[in-house]
Structure formats: C-alpha cells, structure tokens
Length: 260
Ligand SMILES: [Zn+2]
Ligand SMILES: [Zn+2]
Image (cartoon, rainbow, N blue to C red; front, side, top):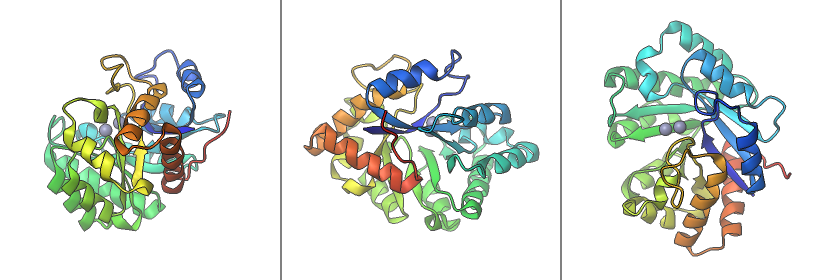
C-alpha cells in the first residue's frame, strides 16, 4: 500500500490518457494518487477530470510559480471555483521558484500569498513548491498564516534547518525521486531523521524518476523505488514505510487508500 501524494497525469504529460499509467501503478501496489492541477484552466480541469469515477484518485488546484505571470483575474476566478470541488484535497502546487525564474519574483510572491488565503478560506491544506527561495517561502507561509491549514512541502529538496522550520509551521515533508540521487546528501539526512508521522512519498511524475529509472518518464508506479530507498535510510522494512506514509497522507490530505 503506497500513496503517490504528487503526480501530474493530465494530457499535457500523458497524452495517451491516465488509464494504463494508473493500472501499472496499481499493480505495483500504489493505492492512491494525488493528481496536481496547474497550468491553464483547461489543463487544471483535465487534471480534476481524472478523479471522476476513480475512487483512488484525488486532485489539487493551484498556480505553479512558473505560471504566476499568466495568472490573471479570469484564471484566478476559474481556479477558485475548481478548488472548492470535493475531490480537490489541497490548494497547490503553489510557491516560489527562484531557480528558473520563469515568472517575475514579485508576481510569484503575490500569487503565492493569494492562494494561501484561498486555502485558508476553503480550509484545505497547501502543497508548496519551493526552489532556491527558502527564506522567502517560510516568511510568506508565516506572514499569511499558512499554519492554520498546514500542508506539505512537495519534492522536498532543502536541508535539515529548513525542514525543522517547515515542520514547526505544520508542513509535512514529501520525498520524490530526488532523494535517491547520489548527490542528495542533505535530503537523505532529512529523510532519515524526520518524525515518522510527518513524511510522505511522491513521484512528481513525469519528472524526476528515481534511481534506477533516472532519465525515464516518471510515473506513479515508480514511487515504490523512492519508498524502498527511504525505508532503507530509516532502517525499517518497506511495508512499514508504506503503511506509515499512507496513514500520513490520509491524515494530511484526507485520502484513504482503496484496496484493489
Ligand atoms: Zn513542484
Ligand atoms: Zn509538481
């Protein structure tokens, strides 16, 4: 039993549709999927549509920091409407990406703040994307009262000092394939150390396939490799890691694993 707490499955990434990808993951023991809705309104609607008639798929709705510059009033209004849907379990991914800077930083911060407010209005947790902006991310989460709803830091790629502060703000740590990379020493340290009730696993598919599949198009079935690696870091059996991260996902996002 494993839950992929962050995957992109809409037609932008899986033009052949999600069915076969989901079937492969279910065969590998993945019993829940949180499908991220970001991009245009149509793309977000497509992500949300994947949850229909699939009781093991849930969605999030937000504005990726890369897209902050294209978030106008019309898109915002549409996303606010979609985010209220019952199958939408969180607002996100939202945050700051000062590595790529695809959108002006000022605009990234403005959109990030706006959608934290939305999460608070909807009383839904927040899925945070943060890259090369640790201080700014923590400052905005603090200033906007994100602690009231909490959430998770997706694709955790910071250090222990950041992790400690994120945990204090009621944000769990979700580990992607990056944790399996040889160079990811800081992330591995956090994955080994973090409290058992505060860790999650994800693929961020189609990106960041874990070792030994690095370079391939990532898909939710691969979360197994990340889970096995994190279990090894913590010195516990895979089954125990799978059970505890699934419980954590259930508690944080309200997604309950469906046995197939
Ligand atoms: Zn992200
Ligand atoms: Zn993502």
